[in-house]
Length: 226
Ligand SMILES: Nc1nc2c(ncn2[C@@H]2O[C@H](COP(=O)(O)OP(=O)(O)OP(=O)(O)O)[C@@H](O)[C@H]2O)c(=O)[nH]1
Image 1 (tube, rainbow, N blue to C red):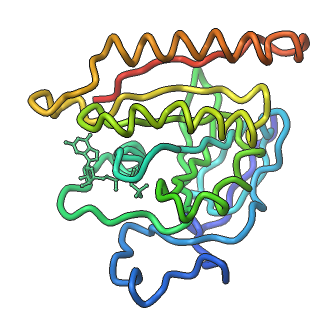
Image 2: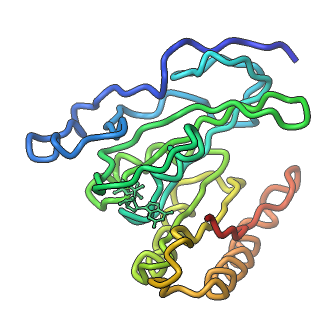
């Protein structure tokens, strides 16, 4: 596999006219939580082999995947991404993401350089139409809920309906129960998360199982993030 070098800009941010931060919310922007225009990065299809992409890290890579973080506002999508990318936890005041943003990270998996282009979406309802457009190019979706927030768990069903409508049928899905450090405030039991994941893995397989015989069966995995 040939190795390409990505351009030297970090998770790009080009505000879209339709999602430009207003005067009211501009002051809430932080951590590169920026609105972006329509999808133009990794095209859908099999993982990209040695392609340069938008917002590179300057690292070489063999294969690239587009991953999206979705879930209610406040479940911890941005913090998870920042933690994964930079190893730091964003403590302090909660500042909601505006629109959509991404970060790249290259990992070494058994000698193969895997570039993940991870898209952080806004959980707020008003940005939903912006994020819908990005689903169809995603290879994987991480669907988060907050174990201290029952609503965010109850809304998983609605998120799955949205994913079924806008994402590719063979997208890899993972359900994550976030904020497990807040044991005192936990209101969603781990077993309930596992049960939901199993239930929807079954539903997903029943709906999409026979449609792509050329690809391995996808389902909804469950993972509890700490
Ligand atoms: N205790 C705890 N708090 C967390 C964790 N992850 C995020 N938070 C807090 O939860 C709040 C929301 O986190 P964000 O990452 O901004 O949430 P988000 O899902 O990106 O929200 P939107 O951008 O509105 O969609 C912040 O105050 C974080 O500090 C975690 O693992 N544990």
